[in-house]
Length: 115
Image (cartoon, helix red, strand yellow):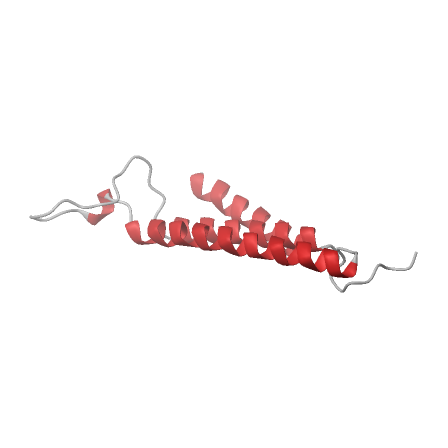
């Protein structure tokens, strides 16, 4: 059941992010990129096996059953991806504000559509 909920969440985030990336306003594009990065982060995180209440690190010595532990590599990758996506979003916002100041519009191609 947990796998179904997580896969639905990833699908909804990816679809919403893709739809927003295709919108004509820069703010919508940035929000779409954020949603898409959240979907990718959840996907990477789910690759480390969905376990609840299990430690990510195995103790030293002797035989250890790896099924009793979570995989720490996807957790570390997602943590790094969160930091990088935060910095990238901040950069996109600065570029968007500069573009808005130069062109006077927040349209992606710099021109408003004629009604």
